[in-house]
Image (cartoon, rainbow, N blue to C red):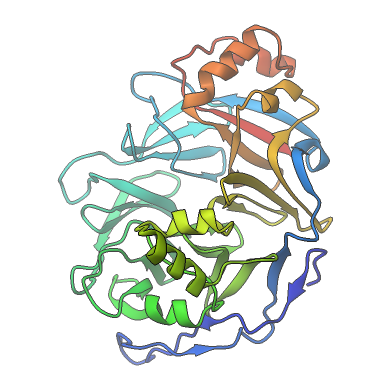
Length: 408
């Protein structure tokens, strides 16, 4: 597969999976090898991409529709931590205020809550992740370290599986691919510590991937890793990224391998970041990366059959990244701009990408920006289609997040 942005077969490292097929075996040390045969690495050369202050979404999408999520006492959301779709149903995880997964139709009308909150074996307390695995929907409870499964489409509780991790290891995010479960690891209480664990369908650890020490020494050889790591579950596979990393890994049946990385002049090395942190007495590695102008904190990563979208930090600036796989166009900019609703993007109402299906790419407006969005609607600064105008006219400053639907 050829991409306009530079694809390189490089010596970027991945952590290979070589566990026993006869029985679960926890590997104590994983060797570092070259990139998987036949796999290309998408290397984004920031020095060769025209940097835009305002990046037009109209260059990628035909038109825009708005979906206000119904606001009731039962459906009130604080923010969207995770979103996914199945048929006509939108699943929204709010782990901050609602602390539950709520269901809406694609017209924004409220359906109900998935499962129930509580301490019972079929209930969840602290949901931090959710997704779709085959014919089941799952919710991960980080406090209970438990995956709860619900049948689709009736959403009846099926069963729960508790992660059987060792040495007080904890997880906040998971990815499921067939019978494989992948979990991030924090507060492992062991040395060496790992960033990713593979578990079987019974949630028993069968592989530990990416030793932090080995990652610092080998993977990309110039990226310092610390803090939080998490997954992005996409319609085309599972992606893994780390807070202080400038790279995205792909997780597949043959192992973990580099998928996307940044290239630019004066890229800070692991040694340079560590030296700066020690010299300045800075305990937060991200602050050293920021002061050295490094790329880090890839967030809101969304990938479908056609687009890759996310934010990333370089220095003190938050940047938007959009890549169109069909046209092979890659663009990077500070502000998003839309010719359909030009004032929307100019007033710091920043749409956040969350999902892609066959026809559309979905963004949402953060609750903290809804009041500004409502004010612009009332003043006529935002234009919209007649069908949307009626629904949007009922919004007030205490409304739920609004989904923005861009048609491909």
